[in-house]
Image (cartoon, rainbow, N blue to C red; front, side):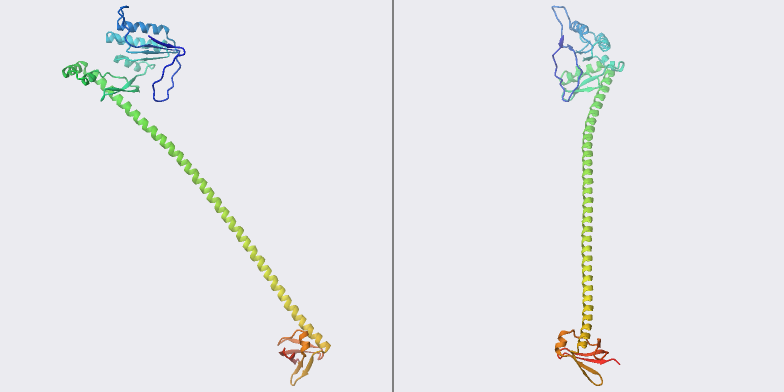
Length: 337
């Protein structure tokens, strides 16, 4: 009996991360324990080891049983094996793992929920185990197929298949179908997990793309608002500038008009002053009165224009300018009647 307790550990031979419960001890009945000195057959040796395990194991122990119920009559061995396993499940250890070739032990799952079937996947083409555990599927024997592969006489193989019986062959066929179904399930499960990972990545990528599009749209909207604001500010600046220029132009025009009016009034006043001082010389003409100013007087006062009406103080009348000769300093007027 192999017993491992307190401070010892076993490696878990698995390609993926595995979680297992904590065991206080690991008990194992593996191999052929027959002894000539103790008059123990293979079957007796196994029973002795299992009896010791049953006494020492606790509810926190792991028990490993190899080929339980083997080494004796198959029917009796199967019945004894079923009884032992039910005893361990009811009030024995925490977990029991047993291997067997007895088909009756494979039916425990359907009568007791504490049991579960599992088998090692077997490559029937190369006749080698793949070391992959298939849960929920009972294993089946490949003895006749292996014997045929090892080139045992065909007459022996055919006879063995006949003796094996059609019912057993049907059971093996059902098990084979279950294995294929399980393999197909695992294959589809792996594909589903792959596509799930891809869909999650795609979903993450789509979310990232949507975030970037939203950020880009926000940036464009803010840029447009800034452009509109800048354009409005520029338009207001140009409008204010034009208003200032128009106001300045209107002011200049008003000042120019006032200057012209002031100049006209100054000219009239100058003519009045010249008449009062009697500095200009006026010559009467027939039928109109012609008045002549000397050049000095014309230079000192503003020269009236043709059509202007002025008042001559010396005559005490208003006259209309008919002709202006700036070079001679003379103007020709017509006295109003």
